[in-house]
Length: 223
Image (cartoon, rainbow, N blue to C red; front, side):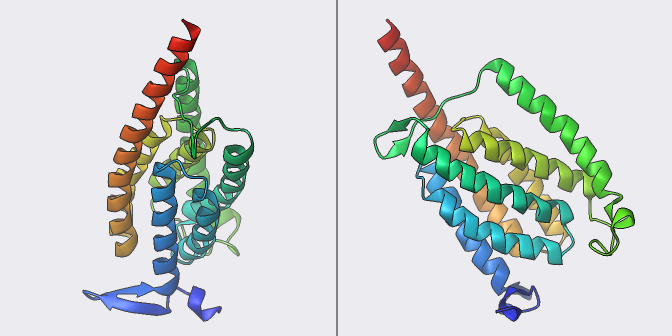
């Protein structure tokens, strides 16, 4: 089992690229969880938990420390999202109902994201000096990695709260991720981010349509 979780345990080599078992399994589960959340299906969360665990192991081994720590947040967010969608979130039949945040809420989220990105980037650029036992080498692209991490935090929280603008953050994260993972030579993950970008655009379009429909329904009820 331990060898299965190593990036050195290769499942298959495609065009000269050795794909590990942990990368393949994490990627397939992650794709499934995104497809489910595009559909506003609560099963996205348990599937996401499994992918989070595998990705933590992958990112730690390739020294993308911000991404590795990000998975711990995702684990908590998946548990919270699962609970919220099943117990508290509004529903439209078998699917959860979604909406946009207020302009003030959007501005607050964007400001917090920017400040936290700079702070985490600074920390990750020095973490190998503070804790060399845990992080033996300098982080790769600490500010870029940190920015995508914090934007992902914001997006995950907004998805758990059923907010449509979460997909805008995911679109930005996916664009940067395609470049970052290509540079780090994690090609299968880079390809995943191409697919995720397509799914994020589709998710935004679908959730926006559902948000508009809900707003019109609430307006008609108020009238």
